[in-house]
Length: 251
DNA sequence: TTTACGGCTGACA
DNA sequence: GTGTCAGCCGTAA
Image (cartoon, rainbow, N blue to C red; front, side, top):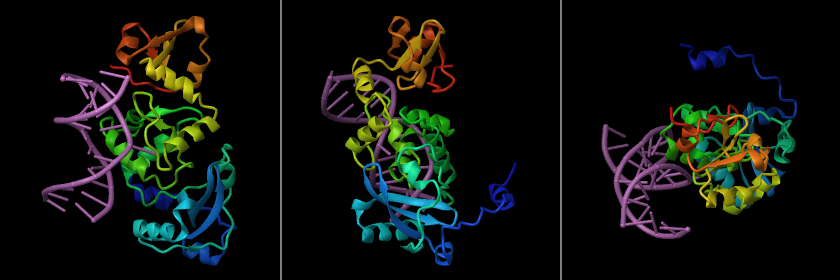
């Protein structure tokens, strides 16, 4: 019904980026900023953060990769980090502007769904696929997240395998665990549940079933916690899906 | 237009 | 418990 292009054209222009000088408004610029695991290289365009990678990549490789991927050059920025970027990288609830104009519709849907995963919680790839409106495109979700232009800002480290293992990560599986622990996720507890084949946790007083990392699940007392190995098992026991973490239950 | 390739998943040894 | 395989699907070349 509404043409996305028209929507964008009709949108009010972004406020002037006072932290950028004229050059930065014409050409994307990269800068080096501290991140949770070490320094990062970040490309900032006039519309927001466009690209972020580990500084260990090396500046030359970083610039080359950016040029190849976005078909445009990137210069060293003379500006400072845009508003909100540094706090967001420190884990504070800050939302720097992110420019995903080059992403496809599917990529944007995947990144948007991933961005909705609360800090300290995890969701399976299949959950992201469902939230993105392509429930069977699980593998494709992995492909999108593997090339997430703005990791950390779009928290792809919170997307894990369906069996409870953490799965792979752009910066390495160990970094994924470190980041999650830094958000106070109970990585070891979740792994222990997964090892026992527990896929969902229910609260018998409410009949609501959650993904194990859901903040509601963490508050279930031992006396009222009910463990389920599958969604079908929870459904058969009369439980309904938590409205926050939205585990997939068969219809 | 076609093909190959994954940060996956579920089923079955 | 672990290993393998086929199926899945959006992208890039």
